Image 1 (cartoon, rainbow, N blue to C red):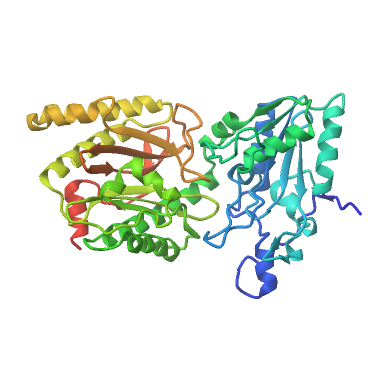
Image 2: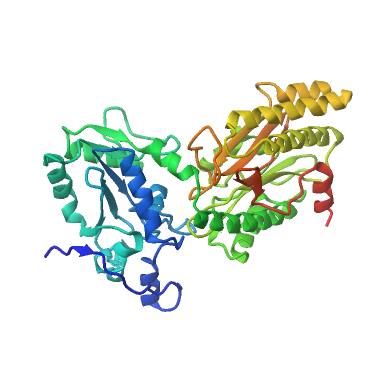
Length: 461
């Protein structure tokens, strides 16, 4: 028998894992981690449908169980943004823009280790619709008939829209064969087969614009995550020592995130030393069994790039650390020029400022520092050149690294400003989280050493 579920509020289930099997199973379907109001999610969805009149938008949740190696199960970010439902594996959100109807299709009870979890059956969740302001919750068997009937209706949608990844998804599909990996690619492939005569499109640009400005509830979580990430960064910095292993420093970061009341790291820490501190090598950690683990050497610099997560939101912050605890004179000159440019860019940031204007302010500050000290002039010109410092700016939110939704800063945008520069064998990296306001910025990762002198003093503890 089909079991439709409409709005019916109910009490919150147990949310403390580890207190008996029943509590654990109920924890799998807990209410939104972000604890935001249902009207918040309803408003976000209506803004999305208003931007795409006449379309049907399909946003799937993540369906796979977490791997044994992962610290926790992470919901698909866009699905989470529009529902607040952190633990609903296999659900599908359908938004019919022609009627502004929001329907959630619920998958059967999931399995893990071949064991069914009936207490996690979403159709047995009377609170599910109310938690996110959903119009109706239907069993997943109704998904295809529902979409087809709406596409065939005279007042129905004229196209299907999907989200796409923020970054390219690696594929290992042999040419001429169907896609074998990637949630978004698999969904598009499946829907195109099911509805071959229907035009398709993307909502990614609109989603990025909506996520670019954070709500008060989101800012609350990001402030908390920023403070915890700053503490974890300090722990990671102090764990760097000559002859020490990168893995030891990573473990210290993760432990501190947990000690600070977070759910864990928002990404596995990058505490890469020497040649691995260069961004071209850092990204190789995604395909390295050892995560590029190596022993820190005297004279090397280490990129400490970390973040903690909680409430469904991430954090991202970083510094460069000299393994010996002190900079060489040349390293200190480069670092302090980078800091001068960084602070110049931050000083230019406020609502309405373009990202490229803030980046240009950083370049100008580096040149100004060089003009003030003739011994630094040539170096400052090299660092301010087009192929010099990479003045990277990205958003921070549900994902610790989000693509900017617009080329302009908005009040409520939360960004990470992370300049990177390589000179010879040394790689320099600096990052903080900033909340953009109408008049300037608020630092969300406070209490960290920044200049070369401050970092040396901190490491001497």
